Image (cartoon, rainbow, N blue to C red; front, top):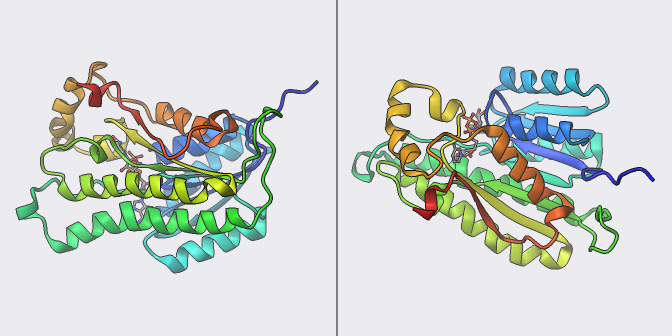
Length: 269
Ligand SMILES: NC(=O)c1ccc[n+]([C@@H]2O[C@H](COP(=O)([O-])OP(=O)(O)OC[C@H]3O[C@@H](n4cnc5c(N)ncnc54)[C@H](O)[C@@H]3O)[C@@H](O)[C@H]2O)c1
């Protein structure tokens, strides 16, 4: 008998450009046999690179890519309309798009900077997941990989941060935006459990991506956080991607409203 596929449905990933967590998640879905993947990011050139990499490694996988800004609700509507036309549904949504902010204390942070970080990280994540939930609610559930388990109408994973759980100097807007994502995740998990939709989030530690390696200054700023964590290294985007795929899959069928740390042990210290 052929093995049951873990990802027979449609995946959607925001923040999927470049070499960050979103791109790793999109590629991991393709490697795991998901054959319909929708990706978006504000950076169109790098988004197309993710698409090309998936199509070249997995010729049977259909990729919908559409660039845009997740803080714009009109763009979210347009992207979801394209996804609906091309694939008809969304089963696994991983909301990765985010920004770090400019590393200042509250008294040096401008209102514009505070709004920018919260607009992308919290409001944009809410706009994305709201649209995903709306579509999921209209679709028939898919069976589990295990016939003994309940069906799944959809699974959402929001990428929060360890900084939504613990504090870090000079990051009040970012920490607050990620705490909001964790709280929103829990609330949505309660509201949509009866619909067979699971909503979880991941709290990565310091992960080696353009966000954390784009300058010597940011690497030096993050060094203490790397050294405090028992594993004393940066994580890899692929390590976060594997956790996201687990949470999306029916292997995580009883995991609901969870904030999973993937941080080399940082928050246990
Ligand atoms: N790298 C880390 O150490 C780390 C740790 C904890 C949490 N995170 C979170 O993980 C997620 C992915 O970050 P990453 O490390 O891969 O960084 P990254 O900079 O490589 O990826 C973030 C992506 O989001 C996109 N983006 C930014 N603003 C957007 C907008 N308004 N609309 C659409 N796309 C937008 C960027 O273009 C980029 O491709 C973020 O939410 C980040 O906060 C990262």
